[in-house]
Every structure is written in structure tokens, then in C-alpha cells.
Length: 360
Ligand SMILES: O=C(O)CCC(=O)C(=O)O
Ligand SMILES: [Fe+2]
Image 1 (spheres, helix red, strand yellow):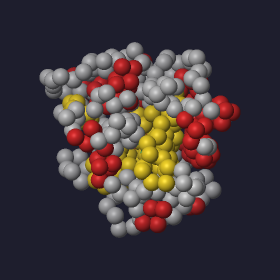
Image 2: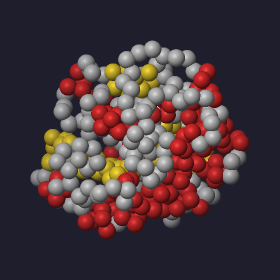
Image 3: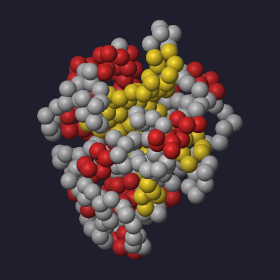
Image 4: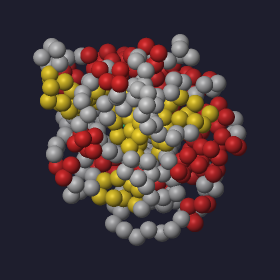
């Protein structure tokens, strides 16, 4: 295992802290249609919306793990570039969402340069050549084959999970697959994430609370810091990175499609604890989304039909409109089983116009 991932090169996850009760689902078993694994997967999608996907023993899964390691090396190289170079590929002038983005922490590094929390979203349609490519740094372009293979592999894993959901939800055959055709334009993207060591700050932590707004997210992280809120409580617990597994979570689109049957759980990232606290933290995220033109509303058929009808002021929009509104902070709020909860008057959102975290 040690040779497949780089976790052993980093300090250990802090002991004695409360961790999230994530179940582990074997991807190898999902691939062969194992009934028990499928049931465990569906239960996790309904109850917590977060689980470990154990990639070991699956050729595709282990390939994804190996590619995630390579992309992690690449992101560390990318973030080492001078700020003025990275800024050329930044929001808002390049694109309001698919671009480099940062927020300054208000402290300077040893070299006197202000420390930044950073991310860089590269969209699937640029990577696969589905559209005219946005300008990007040569380092990204030179590694397009790696990106491409990662996107195709993550999408194959996502498609496998969508198929299981389709069956479990007893939806007409191909319902979810037809909303996620890879060669159609969509908001799928790969995100590089880096945060320098910084002390815990309650305002930043609360501002970072979010649900992901797409379909299925595949997340690799190497240090602690990811927290999820325990359903129906105000308690935040840490997610321990597990070598050879990724963390999978569902986004708002699946909650919307299933009228609240599936869960998109609130989460956030805070500085890692213990020996990990002095290390720069990276994570790598693959977000899958419904096709741009799909209107986000409840699906017809199967178990969804048995879900209660909720009245409310839920905005009905296409996946593309939803991404642009949420991703640029114009739609502050989170999804819960009760529907969309606006956070418009939340004073925490007024504290900074640049909201780097919390815009998944
Ligand atoms: O960095 C992580 O561990 C999680 C990141 C995340 O939740 C996001 O980018 O949506
Ligand atoms: Fe997220």
C-alpha cells in the first residue's frame, strides 16, 4: 500500500479526535454488481451522503488512486509558481468559475509574500476537447493526457455509482445516465486545492460550510481537516484520510432529482490538527454535474414518486445556471432534506466578498 500512495510521507492524522462514521464501500464489489455492496452504498447515500470508496482490488480504482497521486505532485508544482503568474489564469477575467482563485490569509510567509489559500478549477470539457479551451498555464496543458485519463476514469467510477443509484431508486433504465452524458457540456471539473498552515478561525470555518452542488464528488486528501456535520446535530467531526480510498459525497443535484431521498451533507475544511498542523494541505477533487441544460427538478418514477411533495421557493434552474449562481456566491444557501435553505441574511456571508471555501 505504501508504494501506491504518499500518505506515509506525511505526519499521521491526529489521534484522540472525534471522526466521522463513514462506511467503506468496495468499488471492486460495486463494479461486479455485488448486492450487499450496492445496498451498503445506497444506505450511505441516503443516510449520510458521504462514504469511503475503497479502490483497492479494482484495476480502475487503483489506476484512479495512482493518477490522483500524480496530479497531487503536479498541483504542488503549480501552486509553487509566482503569484503573478498564477493570477493570469485567475477569476474573474478568465472565467467566473473555471479558473485559478485565491484568498489571502492576512499573514506573510518566510519570503515576505502574503500567504494564500488557493484552488484551480479545470473543466472536463476543456480537458476532453468538448469546447474551445479556456487559456491555462502551460504546466496544465502539458499534462492534459494525465488530466484526460483522470477525468475518464473518475467518470467511469461515477457512471458505475449512478447505475447503482438508478437501480436502487427503481428509476426507468438509463434515467441518471442520460442526464450525465460525458460528451455533452457539463460543469464536471477537476479542482486542485492548497492551503498553507494557519490557526483555526471560527469565522473562516463557518464561512467554509457548504454542500457540493453537483451529482457525485470524488475527493482525495492526504491530511486531515475535512469535517462533516453530523446529521440533525450541530456537531462537526473530522474525516480521516484512508490510503487507497477516496471520499465520495453526493451533491445537491441528486437531492433535487430524488426529492430529498438522497443526502448531500454539509461539510467544510479547517486546518489539520496535531503534527499535521504545520504542513501545507492539498486535496484533489473531481466534481461530476448534470449536463448544463438539465433542469434541476424531481425525477419521475420509482422511489422518487413516493417522496413527499415540498412546496417552497426553491429556484428552478438549469444545472449551468445553478453552478454559475452557486459557484460565484450569488445563491448563498445549502440543501437539506427540507429543501433549499437560504443563507442570504447570514452575517457570516457579508464578512468577505471573496468566498473561496464553501463554493463547491
Ligand atoms: O479539501 C477537502 O478535503 C474537501 C474540499 C471540498 O469539500 C470541496 O472542494 O468542495
Ligand atoms: Fe465540498
